[in-house]
Length: 192
Image (cartoon, rainbow, N blue to C red; front, side):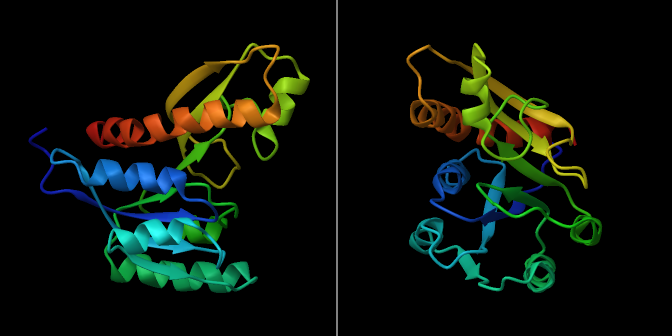
């Protein structure tokens, strides 16, 4: 691990409850953590995750703008100003534009609640149950201009039982998400 000079400076984009953000904050506070979360940005004013950022004294911003262009422009300014090296999307419900990805130019990681390349986009649990899949899970991948199609960094499976509902499957997958996001970051950084 000699190649790491200090912790990597990361930002997290959220839209909702922020449970993956909470998991990343917990990891970042460990003595041997490879990351420092310097910035949290939400695109929704009621995102519960903002509270986690405030409680951990992490700079946080909420842009209520419906305009994707305004949101991305303001976010890019903050990412550059805070010298963010990696951007992590954690329950962030907007699709970033190709222009944003190009201008940020550093790695962007996303967590997705399915075993990609299966079930890109939304309603992953509903589709997995409807298709009677034996397994679902979570994937951490690089963000590219093509939705949920970037290089897969880390995946973990969960078994789908006949008794599972969309709700019970979501809970199982979420538990796995919390476990693998920090692991995926470590793996990603180790391969840089």
